[in-house]
Image (tube, rainbow, N blue to C red; front, side):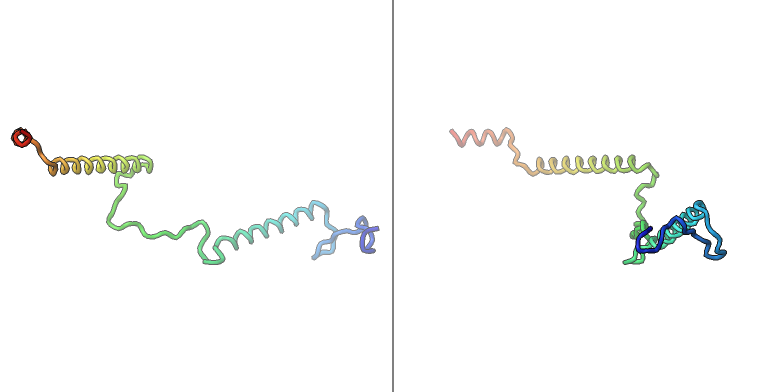
Length: 124
C-alpha cells in the first residue's frame, strides 16, 4: 500500500489527455523532454532583455565614434597599433625632455675664462 491510503502505483496507468489511451514510458519521456525544451526556450526568450532597463543583454550601449579623427588609418592589427602608439609616446617624451634640458642649459649661469680671472683677482 502507498501513502495516504490511495493504493499502490503499480496498478495505475498514465493516459493521453486527448484520446484516453495509455501512454508508454517512451512516449511519456518524450513528452516530458519536449515540454522541458519548450520551457527552456521560453525562458531564454524572456531573458534577452534586462528587466530593469529593457536593454538587450550583452549588447552594451556605447557612445558614438569620434568625428574627424581616424586613429588607426593604416588598419593595423590592434597589438601593432597600440605598440606604435606607445613608441610615438616614448619618442615625444624623449624629445620634450631633451628640449627642457637644452632650455635649462641656455638659462644656466655661464662661466668663461674672463669670469675666472675676475674671481681670481677678487680672492687675491
